[in-house]
Image 1 (cartoon, one colour):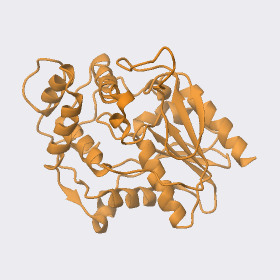
Image 2: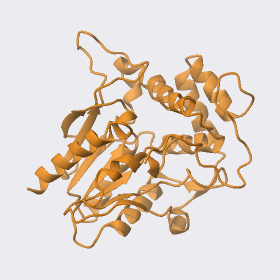
Image 3: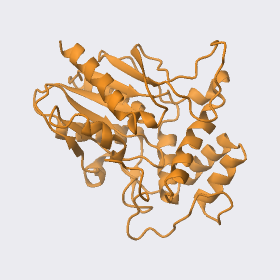
Image 4: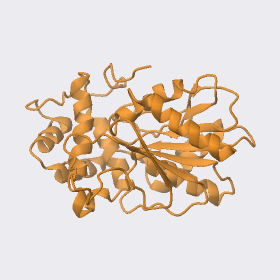
Length: 308
């Protein structure tokens, strides 16, 4: 089920549509694109964080009213189910896992727990704190995990940060996942490393390349949603967990990635908490697109090894 062949979702009542092509008119999306095209990647990120303060927020007491419903992508008798968390970029959503989920059809349950902000448009309220977001996502996971049945938590890109934070919260509540899978996830502070100055531009460039390639429209509200989540995660660091961690690293660099031919620095995804790393075909995005089958196979092999 391909997902990048249509316009990004837009809710009724959303007031502004802005193409992200260079030279387009006003609006946050056009300004963000122009800043990126001129190499002002850090400044563009700060712009989104600043603009994110215009979005309405909700606290933990209101989380039930704002929580998006989990999405089931596959069902099956497999002992370990998978609960997936999407990335938090402007093109994120449950659709990221569409092909991945199909790879487990009739084999095991695969669910996606979305975060607010990617479906209803610019008036959709967003969590007022990281604690509210994680508490909401923990409860979303508990809705889809059958009583006593083991499950693994999966996160892609910045969704890996969400998945790790959810795993920490679950362990604190006495419910340990069978495993935590990070699909090409980097820590929040990756761009601050001296040898990774390319990271911000390559990641945003990859996102914009997909918008152009599939002739999609990017709306300002999705960028401010991205800004909110970037702001909430500022300073976050993953805590050690008892849950085993698998980091799947893309083997193909995005355009703009600095690759050291002498191997003194490594551009591939990394994680600051103990984990097992496995390389999979594709780049940061295509690991869940045309290479979703091999990504699913790597997850399958690891889960089966864990469950013995």
